[in-house]
Length: 297
Image (cartoon, rainbow, N blue to C red):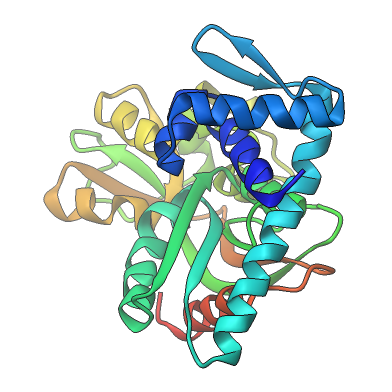
């Protein structure tokens, strides 16, 4: 079992496909298949189930994947440490993010960071806050920027920036032109929510709990897995929603969507940098953390 085999196995597991993994690694599919076969023979267990054109990780494969991600991260850290010793900043960095920071904050920051260190490669994985925190906990990502402090053994948080949570409405809505509405008015509207695990959803539920209210008293008409889906549904008149103001800045300027706030329900949250308490970070990850904490958001 060598690092190259583990790298190939991890890529197949990530992409769920031998062919996509081969393309991502600039290898042929037979080469990828042979590496996986050799690894399975050496360990004496099936790691991947072949499902037509796809591949699914077996329970044994999931166990190995946990260690593989840690070993590959340590190898990247070693390479970066040697580059740092030689006065270079290079290597690969994988970071996670929840939807809002991943789509509206980090891309520009990644671009500015790469201008400063052009020899590096950064991969940005985007999911909900729970998924991004899990990536840090599992060692898949060295750090993540998320919209909620979620309980996860070993993960710690540093506040990065405050967010502005608003109620987003379609352009033709009767609330357009108003700055605030009441909780009772919001309760009477069809409401679209982000899925459980979203930082935005967690912020809304926390605000309702503080106000001794429950989502069960609202007209929830749907849950969606992305902010983009929420915005499209609001534009189509399906309902209103509670999302980050950062996500609708462009639509608000163009008049496609409007925003109001709930006068008697303050909804506040921050974005956080999530890292693992016990795992050391690579020099590149530490440099990126220091960079985003010093940059205006």
